[in-house]
Length: 174
Picture 1 (tube, rainbow, N blue to C red):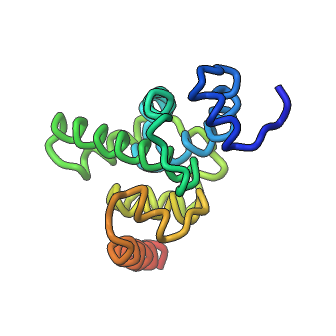
Picture 2 (cartoon, helix red, strand yellow):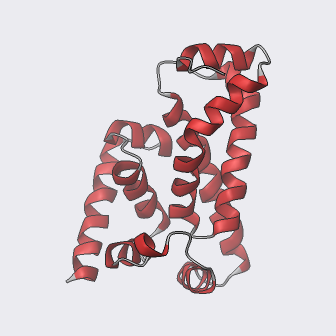
């Protein structure tokens, strides 16, 4: 299939063209997986959440608002699914800190060179919403406004969370 522009691929996908949707999935699957992993810190869960995001997006594609980038819409769906996964998982574990520590220590890291860096280890210790802000802004390249849209919070909250995340990282890396 030749390279098509995104609005055309979206229109074709809505009309039932599975190859067009497959091309959209191929464009975003790696970034979406990395984003999910940055939040849940579990390879299998991140893969499942990313896949579930694409399934949900496929069925909701007719409701997609083209005023936003498709990637922003996908990240929003994935973020909600990842945070819901954390909530469900946290109910099974006594404390969130115990959950994050046990998951992070028991799983192999997908990209050992990058994730074993001091910065990534420090980010791993942040609260899930701070990890989400860091992932969306720095690793996925979204603007503060786009991050706010994805997380469904005011832009001021994103800026505050980013400031607190940076303060925590400075302390951790000092």
